Length: 625
Image 1 (tube, one colour):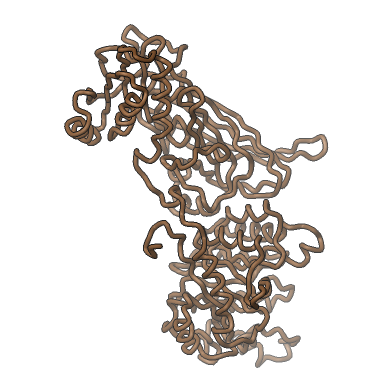
Image 2 (spheres, one colour):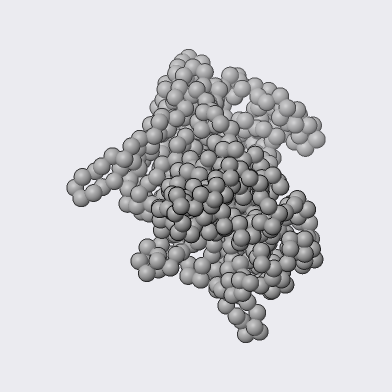
């Protein structure tokens, strides 16, 4: 296997926790590089820095000297070198700073609370000064409002450094209470108080007990930047080496797909001061990474019109067999509208050869660059078998009527590349009993949780990007309910009203509205709406990006994502109504969308609110006619 092949799974970075009670960072850094570590998680300060917490029971009114010492420190005195474990920039490029665990920003003691905030800000300021890529913060307790407020105030001034919040999959009290969502709910409360800041991410800590699969699935919609793997969750195989259970293996491999950083936490020997003590665990994780299946064609992001042509070939082939009797010399006229670079033309010719039916092909294309390619294909490959025309199909004057129209105008939302409008315009040169390939396409939507996708839209800091749909290969997402049908288009449209030249009078027949109701079983954050399509090309020959009916090997289309400007918290067993519009005027087509949600309590249906209406009048995104 070629190690440089793009079919290999991504190599995950591996790191390890280090203790301030062992060798200095220089020694640890050298050991790490020699043993193949990618990074270290190191304390920023040494344990004695805790003295500035002033957590002893002291009456400051009686001890003015101690009070003055505390106030001098609060005023902004710098670290003393003896208080720092992470002293210089020498190994900063491979270090993640660990914030002191004794910091308690929600202490009932006002002095401890104030001093904790100052200490945390001082540690993070030092990490930022050194240029660390990230700092690791401890998991919040069940009432962490001041903690979140303090972190939020810091996030806004970080230029480079990111904040990783350590979040365990399960707490011991969760096991006792059989409530598996406590950690997610605390994380969700924390990030909501921080306004879903793009620099706040998760360091997900694996636990010996894993929650149910539907709980695990939810985490893939969250911004996981690191995965902490404690050594006490490993089993020992017959040869004495550490291994993970099958369920852990499957979960870890999925986390490796999203390129998280992995950190070994030596829970069995907290005072271990050497890197080698964790090497067997890290080698096992490397093994899991190396033995992952090769990336599929979809995952390699291959592109091009030739990506998925088998279904159109089959559709044209069967349409020819149905339309013309064997051994007939009747010529079937095929028009490829929106021919692009010509793959459907080539496939139509191949289908005719396979069916042993004579055909005459027209290829219509309005893009000047694509038309140059068509000219080359005609000169070098097709010859007189194909007539090419440089025109918008809606305005082209066809020399004869077509038996079959073939197009590849579908978008990820089915109709989002003007397929209805274009095929309406082309319908005037289709015979009364002619065949359209595709025959129809159905649009689906599903509620989606994805902090990553929302953060990417938020990074632009404008309204336009929250009102623009994006074509995305979904990875760090959680689908909150099964997709539902939104609307459908069929071709040819027998109800079309046209003028004397066969052109439509208006485009209002292509507008749509749908209200879809989804039940959300478990509490979640709604970040947007996912869109998919299914298409019947001809009779039983279909093409789909619907998750449950996805055409095998097809990667010409990825799903589409419609973001919500403000994420919505959805309690367990709540309902959401997703309202979708496809609208038009004389110049453009656009989508509008909004969400309202409610909770059923007994016989009462209690409204929980409504999102804003997105993309009103196509102000941010549209498709020009």
